Image (tube, rainbow, N blue to C red; front, side, top):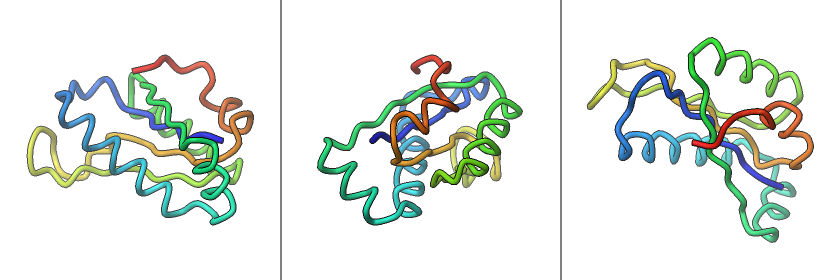
Length: 112
């Protein structure tokens, strides 16, 4: 079991901004995950992997695949208080879910 957070590298967000957006993605997706998967994930150490994509189009393509696969997810839209305009999609939280299920979609992405 793991959770994957995908960050858009094309936005050139600062490190703190990336951390905050990744947290939003993690919590948002976590809240949409079935209880049995959450328990299993927590028992296994709550693994999280942070990866990046180069564009909104790439992120949305993955988002569609995740939805189609029935994996819990959360698409983060920034509030616009600091570095980027309001409504900008910054991250995608995926899972937690089975490693193999998530890896079929995100396995080729580079670590952040």
